[in-house]
Length: 250
Image (spheres, rainbow, N blue to C red):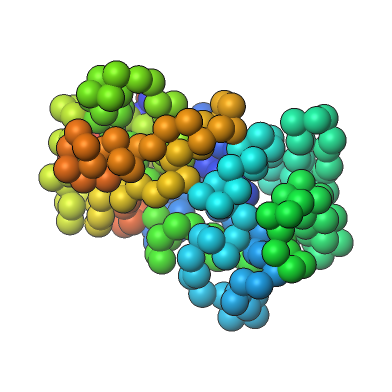
């Protein structure tokens, strides 16, 4: 097996960033993956004592399909997040500073319009991950499983609907469902798979058109009797992961 695509998603709900390589650490997610999020004004989120809460408390594709049209890019070296709306409006600001986060919050709130609730706040909390899981994880999708799903459905479903970190090839479709509680050697790291990824309505949104033009949850249930695509893993031993690296089931 080998890695075919490698991504992080710095802002919860916003666009993917393709990576050539990344250094990961035990117990952590990919660096800068889901490091930022816009919390809705009515969200019960306390940045002084951050804990996991449901994604609907934040700007997210599940509730805000339009945000698929926003392009985001984070440059850690320059400490600069750049956002661009479909109409060409753009903003660049430092998301690690309070002033920059306030400017980013105002830009995103304006873009959300009526979908913004109260006074949304843009957050970055060092060490905290705004992921969909309660623990820090790395997500993987078997491209053969995605291809089998597309074949059964008779339609293409862009891989970025599913927002995984690692997309890999080289094993049978759905083989990954047998990996729960097993370990993988991925490049220079060791991961332990702990659950299948249950899909949600966020996958209805086409990342290329921003339209809700499919229902992968229903489609997966119809063809396979479950709504799972991909697996989540914890990093047991850190190291380097890169495009083309081998994946070996221990």
